[in-house]
Length: 181
Image (tube, rainbow, N blue to C red; front, top):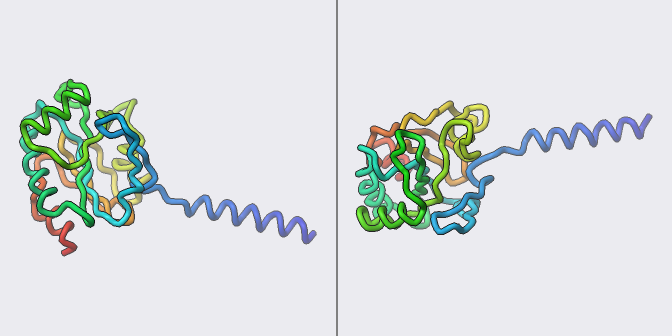
């Protein structure tokens, strides 16, 4: 009888620890625009703004505002991560090499850019599943509306909110969040 109780207690303990394992930004590994693995756990301690980007979109000039935001606040406490995606009207048709060249040449982008992924649909990247589904991120459903949707992640890797594509990267909501107000 004691053995049964011990086994049941061990099983319950194991189930409990699995239930407490929480997925967050730091749980993911992605590929950067150079083709190298990028462990998002390396961003622990920083606020992260995750943005799906495109080079041939009416919102593409947001690259300039993103870069200005990164130059102003980026460093040990804040980073922007760009994820090119071709999910809306084929507005990101280029290769990673072409995207990188476009961003550097036209907007002077220095914030980290990742390899092109899918941010919606049947082939949605696991990171974007987490970002867009309340059942996974614990905060809200945030389906991708268009290019340049912005996701705010706290220093512990937790999803804290989303800003629509139409809102500029330097809007009050994002700047106040970065500053901790």
